[in-house]
Length: 304
Image (cartoon, rainbow, N blue to C red; front, side):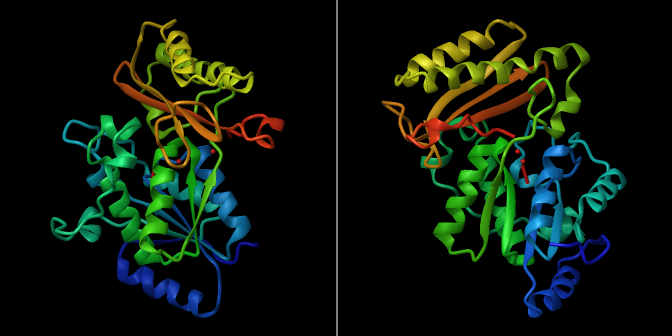
């Protein structure tokens, strides 16, 4: 759909609701792209997809304190509003919602969304307790504030995508969740706002994570059905660079996020590892149903 308005920055919930009320009354389709800012091509791919499919595109830019642990990088998370504003406008955003923490949480929340351990007890949820409760809470608030028809999330954060989709189903949010492929650098590194933390030497090493995942995917597509064998090989590949400290390598069903005894159906092969002071995550989603095996894995794009 064609872009109809120029970008407008809104900082309060009441103003945003007033701004969107007329669009909704006119029957226009509203798309939401939740972000924490410091935009890269992964975010921009979500915006462009929303621009194609929606009449009005809203991008939220909010570094959500509820999803950061006590010793994580909330204070130093990269921020650059003017840069993000320019990139968002160029990509086709109509409304940039940029609230202060005090606007989203005027007092310490007494009510939050809690995600069941069945979805958070592995992968990033095990390493970052409470993280996905914070994600689900802020996304729930954004859905209530914006009331979008569609919302766009990157597959790079595959556990997040699965959890949000399940939340929407469980709580009957009237919004369609659109998962978009991971966007990568030319050498395969998944784009992330946190990549800015990498030193030049670490940046050279970082693409090994994706190469290890590709090795595991090839094993699966060549007929390997033992999850432990695939995980062991991916770990071995990553261990070629001793600078990595592996957080996890896991192979689970997708989007159910459950352990596997035998590889079948659609599966998620995911990894998290520390490189210096930077925690990197990446994954591939592999469909090994008969129709899925006819195609290579889709992996192009994202954290709200």
